[in-house]
Length: 426
Image 1 (tube, rainbow, N blue to C red):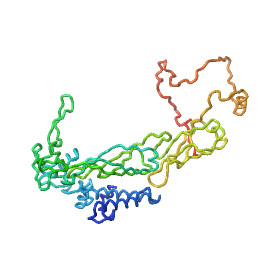
Image 2 (spheres, rainbow, N blue to C red):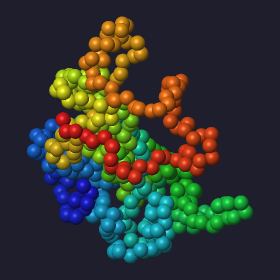
Image 3 (tube, rainbow, N blue to C red):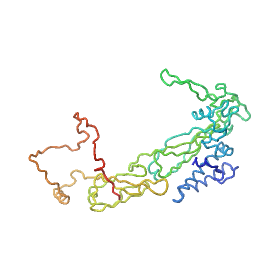
Image 4 (tube, helix red, strand yellow):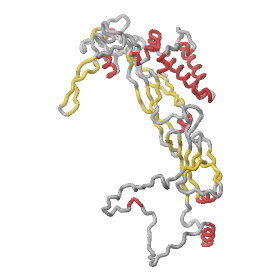
């Protein structure tokens, strides 16, 4: 989105269909109309991708034009003011100086000779730091997509003093602590008996390089140049999004004077699901059947999908299901972000056996034995011992009382591909 808008000049006022002198109320109404018109959830399937791009464009336009500082930068310099590849505005050419490096390290605009705000230096906007946080989403939300609105407390440039920190016509004095540079040297301990000298932000002027007398300070921000405000933000999580994907709200991070605000970046964290597991665009779930169903077939709804639909399977008689079998249902996995295609759903078979003593009389056991296949032929041996055994043994205990170096290691199977469950297409 930002790359596309940075490569060519786009008329943000035109995107929202408002005049350049439009009021904030007019911009807000125009954005609401455009957002409803282009919201991906309301678009036909064949137009969803185009609507998503347009929705992001009008949202970006509103983010800039609804903020007085960003709007002023846009009116003065166009989209170049928001293009990091052009120095956050490109004013002053591609030169790199110490002030640029310090700005990137500390996220503040440094004053002083040769730097922005200092005498003779190019006055160019810089980009503030991004704010990153995790956002937990359920598998259902990733399957269907989600729009989230939330109220955020954010730091904004003081609207009364426009970020100067002083009253109108008041003149600041150079900060005595940093000598107008906005930075001071400090000693930091990095280990036992180890100290390091480093350059840090001046805590007296907050990096401005200049201060106002108490009587000249802005009444609203008390000379701090910024204030706190609550703003309603919205993020759109497209259906089919994956763990680790980033949702970016461009320019919505905390504001600092003489800077272009950074982004708020949400990293999606997929929550555990009780029924489904996900890998890429495919899903898997456990299919539990009774012994009778495994032997004689069934026709029923076997699970409820992430969108609430029941998934019905018909298993014909004569096709026995065994523990560990795998069925594949094409096209019932996660939706892909582009188009209408979906991944596959894999069902891993578990067979429920009856409880001990479920048949009460000998006649029932004899009838069951006659219905089932006969046992294997007897094993011939010259000597036969009749032994006792224990139920519920743990194979992991095998060899634990010996010095065999193989104890505790995983079993090695030379033919790894043989004997594994193969999924059948349902």
